[in-house]
Image (cartoon, rainbow, N blue to C red; front, side, top):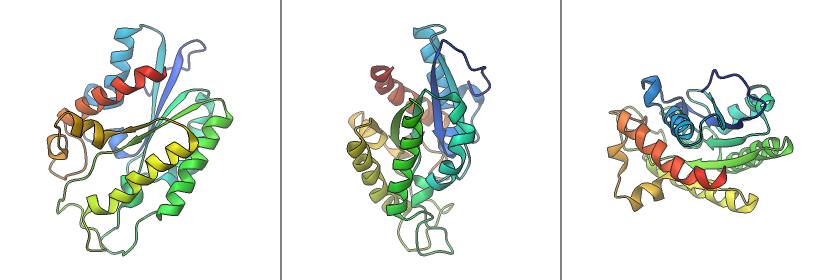
Length: 211
């Protein structure tokens, strides 16, 4: 868990991300990273230590500023990077995304470089497609989902260039007949209890092949 001591023998996993990784508003045992930690402990007791390093509202730029101090001492580790929806968001008072797509791609590459240079392994996670909600009204007249679409494609493109895994949550959900409305709270973005459990199951099913 996020407060666990750094074990010299356990394989470390670090979940880096935004409020979807924080699982804002969720009970501790419902948060998807915690669900993954519990599943790993059940399957292979004592073999893994999982840490959560995530911040509400985080973009790739903000994570890039924190990764050396907040994640560096945990490396080498498998680092699950779950970012994108905040980078793509266009606040109501703006006309452009918080982080432009070229800078977004550059930030992803740099995050990976910093992880790789310390012997770590990067896994990118593509977050789910937000549902239209009055809670988030982009200033460019498009929906949150429309603004996010090119960022989703960019994550997959960068992952391919870097030859690192990318867990595409929207595709994994579609294959199982799960829609975004099945996993979000009333704000259309953050994960419900059911959404956290679904995220945990989808990510864990992919993660096992890389540990």
